[in-house]
Image 1: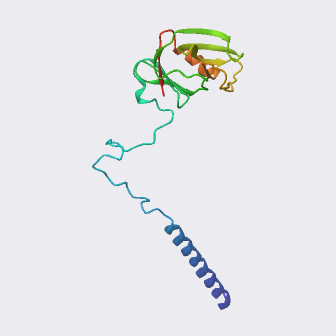
Image 2: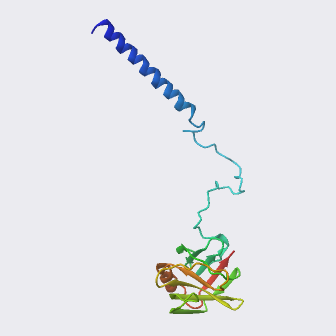
Image 3: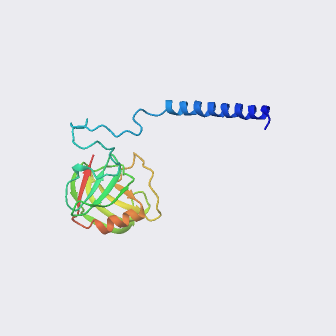
Amino acid sequence: MSRSSSGAVAGLTAAAIAVVGFLAYQASANVPDNLGKAPAASSGPNPTGSAKPSAKPRPDALPEESGSGTRVVYALGKDRVWLVDAKDKVERTYKVSPSTVDPEPGTYAVTSRSGSITGSDGVPIEHVVRFATRDGVVIGFSAAVNGSVPELDPTQRTGGVRETREDGKAMWVFATVGTKVVVLP
């Protein structure tokens, strides 16, 4: 190799090392201080007051205040239902489309069921499981045969809590007459 080409190689090598060094510096400047370090042990409770580290609650987790034993849990604020067995194990949970008339929070029991009828919105529905009445409006879970979800009209007073057909079938099998239904705010 000639002196000029070895000088060029040396220059390119020096430039490459400088670029790599600069990029390494930038990367290290953006690394969090605690990366790769074990979390500090805490002898006291966490800010929530429990000895366990706080975890972000899952939106589909069964609410603690939902009671015990075999039950249907309906959380109005989450528009979610849980089917819970006798050992407090969630068999199924899913979102629902609420009615325009909500039941009051409290504990109810399934009072009646219908395999298929026409809903108050004129849509054929199936797997109707009724559990409450409020201001003369009967409230229950059901699934539209055509799979539709009603558009809520606040001027219409309806008590149908709409489920998918698959969820409606699961409710139908689970919630026989007398099954407890816990309604939470």
